[in-house]
Length: 578
Image 1 (cartoon, one colour):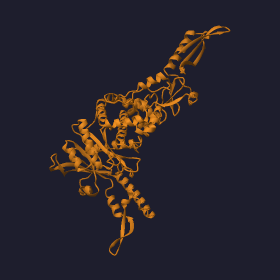
Image 2: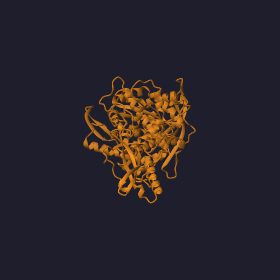
Image 3: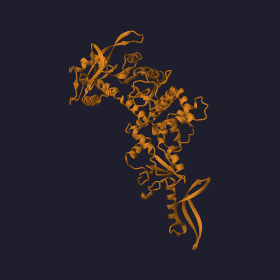
Image 4: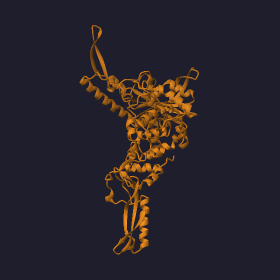
């Protein structure tokens, strides 16, 4: 604001003209001079002078003051300065678009804390600052204008409630996604992974934390996590199972949930060989759906394809001879809805890629190197992946097997495995698909594998520290919503940025508030790189990524300095528009 103060000077009474700003200290309003323009009576052209003052005041109010290079300093001199993250507002806008506040308003709940606020806060922090429930509760004040208030005990009680509402929340979110974005559901992608727990022993009485086949080759008890995803790479639903549940046995319960809650006419399920069982295939076909599954080629299950695979007749090569394929229709044994044995047909694609063959050979050579080293160290008490290439020979004495063991490399197995380098097979119920359609459909599965990587790496969903079944279910619901939020943002950006780069950009979106009721937008604790309009300009990769996020969300590029009221208005203008 402009302030005019009369002062008695030697040469008469003069009017001092200043632009000032108010701030509150101990309940009292005080003012700080932003710029002193001198005395009105000393100006040759008073109208022009007043116009200049008014323009400065207007620009200041809009946060458009130009900063000189020597003002790009750290702003920690003010002992009352506080640093906050404001980047979370972009994620908050996406969460708000799901209208979960409306869902929770219809939930019978008598607690004195807000379920929606807790779910929202933990879903956002699972993306930005993944940590334990205790630590996440302790850092709730690190977010700018995050006004929720709860205690750790409220969090654990909320996890119980989230568990009770798990299926309803997932169904509600799906209905909202259909309205917001729509679901592309010609194909649905399913896979399962597992997460280890920080416990020494498995749960008793059929708990979730059980020992099973760990994807990370750990011995800790694990929990199985199944995820179903649409063609936009947006999660549809998730299910959790005890750690000792076979991958293939997770498929039908998840598909039953989808069929019950999502009213799909027909879906082509896409999954890897872990889901490829006769029961799962019969289940899909008998319910009017289809499948595109990868097929194992080694061992007993793949033996039926060896003759065609190693027969060069029928293969079609590309021009550089680095890719070849063949397709054929095969009959297979099936069971109909009534349990009768019948014959059905499916299409089989067998293909070979030079790049994959080279990679497989390199991985096998690495295993052989490790196997040879282990023989030299005589370290055969600990099992490793390379043990498949080591064979144990037991000596005999008087016709009986003795305890003495001779260990050597099993070169017959090495030679046999090498025959399969670069070969893959996919089977599908869709007989009219050509090889490009089959490959294109199956290739979408990498998005779900990437989703698992995001939850494990960026979201640090494991190790799992919560203990009870309900708390574990509530924890995974939070992770599911976090994954959906980051995928919705990536979809808005046409998947141009990885989740890792988005998270880094949002975590560096910070600001400083001071005792003068000012907000300064920061870059690594300093004022952001600005152009002549005092807006963000192209800088390092993180700044460029932030600009991409801002552009995708149709938001204004922030200025360097605001009053608190202006900055709040800016952040409230950030909304998710599909």
